[in-house]
Amino acid sequence: GAGVSQTPSNKVTEKGKYVELRCDPISGHTALYWYRQSLGQGPEFLIYFQGTGAADDSGLPNDRFFAVRPEGSVSTLKIQRTERGDSAVYLCASSLGAGLADEQFFGPGTRLTVL
Amino acid sequence: SQQGEEDPQALSIQEGENATMNCSYKTSINNLQWYRQNSGRGLVHLILIRSNEREKHSGRLRVTLDTSKKSSSLLITASRAADTASYFCATVLLSGNTPLVFGKGTRLSVIA
Image 1: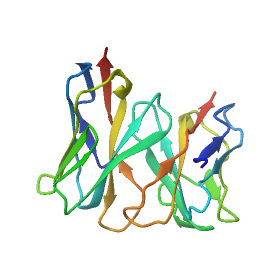
Image 2: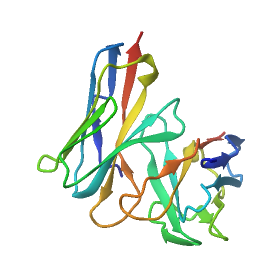
Image 3: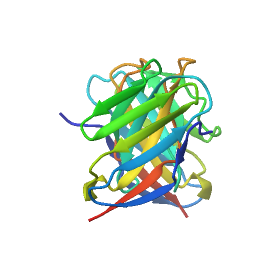
């Protein structure tokens, strides 16, 4: 079956602009996660959803970042007033449930470049 | 913040040799997982080891876990050029927070 997909694969924007990154999880997966990976680093957690609600948004760096999952499937990560430091690969993952041993399946990521 | 630290940061070996990567972490865990990443993009889950397990095998992969030392190792036997990638350990904390906490990774190069 289809894996996790993310669009766009690459996004170049200018400082101060607004961007939206989309994640399509595996069908039937109730948990969805967003991570951010800077060059040479491991992924860092941003936010995760259980169903439609954000169960943990403690990783969002500031209030310029926001994510939604209105129907419990597709999720959109929104970044306002982008800054050069937001440049990174944004990874989405989904899992069947939010259990401690539930495997997370990752998408290919969106590479965001803020000029 | 990142909880895990992989060691070494980079490793270069000849095809057919074994590759060993280590991971240390700071706080108590429910389980530890290893992931592979090619070309800085999507991560592939390799293996999960629970805190009450000491060793686990999957094909050419062998993972050990020492909770007293808060460390884990990943051994890839008979390496192939296709094993060239970055390898990350990720922990799931005992606190029940399910997001993975990743280390910085080991970059493995297998030379044919």
